[in-house]
Amino acid sequence: MLERDFINAQDFILSFKLKWTRFLYPKVREKFLVLKPNIRSKMHLDDVDSLVSNTPDYKIFAWCERHLQKMKYSGGYGLHGFYKERHDVFGEKNSEEKTEKGKKFCLPEYYQAVDIHQQPGGIWSNPFAGLIYERGARTTTPMLGNNHKDLHYRFAETLLKDLKHQNSVATIIDLGCGFGKSTRPIAEYATKSSIIALDLSEPCIKLAREEAKKNKLNNVTFSQADARITSCKDETIDLATSTMLLHEMPESGIIELLSETFRILKPGGRALHLDFWLMRDAFDRFIFEGHSWRNNEPFMSSLFAMDLPKILADIGFVNVEISSFKEAEHIDPENHPYWRFPWTTIGMYKPK
Image (cartoon, rainbow, N blue to C red; front, side, top):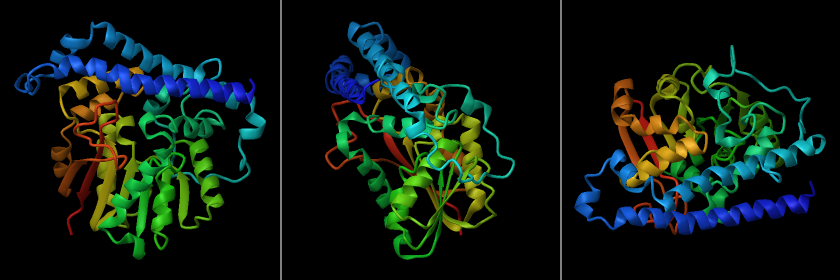
């Protein structure tokens, strides 16, 4: 396909998605908001399902969410076809450089079982999968437009602001680093620290490593490893973090990851995860239960059902703090009228 046709098609899909975000979503939510507040506050998932699931507005909304994503990745001008045609150009730029792997590494079955986000073959199965994932992530949050990068820099600032790691020598681990979306700002801000970045996807690790080299970030070590089995020694990590990882793991995997984090953190060490968990009301829960299936993210709904404060306390963490996260300065998480992810920071400490 011609590159200009590909760009035009992707721009059209993004424009359509903005209409879906700004017009279709409010139309569906309006049916919930017309109810009195005391009624809305008592509603559960099934109540919202009964209220909106059979309405034309919701059916169109759900169809668009599923199929716009499908068009973005595997349509006639989709990301997969574009990069597959240009494999020789966009393939493994650093294919001769060996990727470090964790001990006894193997891809988990759950990770291979579904084409996550509807990306054909997942984000691990071909050498250009990391490039597709990175390009696709640019339009995951359409309201941010060209400011998507800011989300990760804002999170890095939150991660580091009260730990003084920007000016200290610390060991930080980025679990499920992907193509380095949060790793890079962490490395840029915490220049004196050592960052360990792990991910299951070798194509993503290679892309992240290549970008780190371009940006002359010499304080990051990348490894293909399972965040549940980091191979780090006991009590050697000052700060552990992840960005949009928990909702892509089954409940048992999340608990294993959190337990592993507790093991590797130093006494008094901190973990802070950015994910999707806190929601305003039953309507938001209904929308994202549906998103979980429409976007091939089958474990998102199980994360919503987890009692995270209790699980973290049972593992041994203290000072657990779970808060809404503003992905941009102009967004009010409690009153935003358009579709947005329920961004949440999940913070905890290991006792001293």
